[in-house]
Length: 148
Image 1 (cartoon, rainbow, N blue to C red):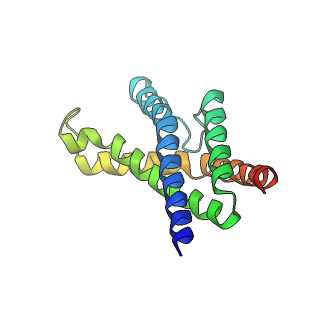
Image 2 (cartoon, rainbow, N blue to C red):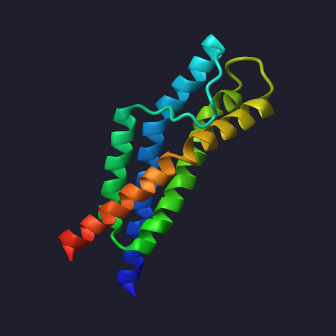
């Protein structure tokens, strides 16, 4: 019974750390994308993959490490789902921080909230989450071969 709780706590801790790492990797790119659009007024397609090769490499590395730690496929699937949702919530909170604190431009706060939600989910859903899932599966396979 105690081993089951230790495994659950370890899975939860890995997922939370994975979410914080993913959000810390992706947030600077999202800030740069929003700043680029605001300064130059250029239209960037909503599904453009705005992450550099370094960001993609760090996402793959963190996901491989998480897959190595989670190992079991159902934990990897649940961990990817939980880390993706938590990373999205962290990024939405960080992007809407000027509206929460009342700083920055005098714009409608509801518009800023909705813009941050749309930008996070546009940039997260297609590429990075699928990339995280594939890298975590590869890490799980590698962990299965190394540790069992």
